Length: 141
Image (cartoon, rainbow, N blue to C red):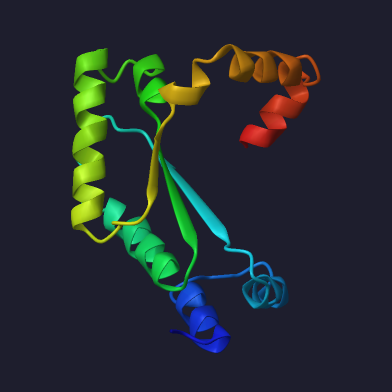
């Protein structure tokens, strides 16, 4: 079992910045299990570029962080990356490949499982009523 210094070193490995080291150390000292999240749009084959984030996520898992992977199938569909059959197959393939590359304990979530629910749509529409075009543009820059 890793001590906190070893966990900090592994989490910080190959990063430009950790905001902040002190907060991360405090979090690791609690009994709470930190959660890391990463989303991917399954719109084609997994490629070498994905290995960068997969490697970091496997390191986070080794350090005791719970990893959640969003397979954003709904985004892929809305971005016209394929029909539902293609996107569903691609998302399954991605999960299989990610597990083979080391992310065996990650939680895999399909975006369509929650993004197409009435509760989610209510949240999106409520949020949109509080946003201006200027704020939206600023957040995307």
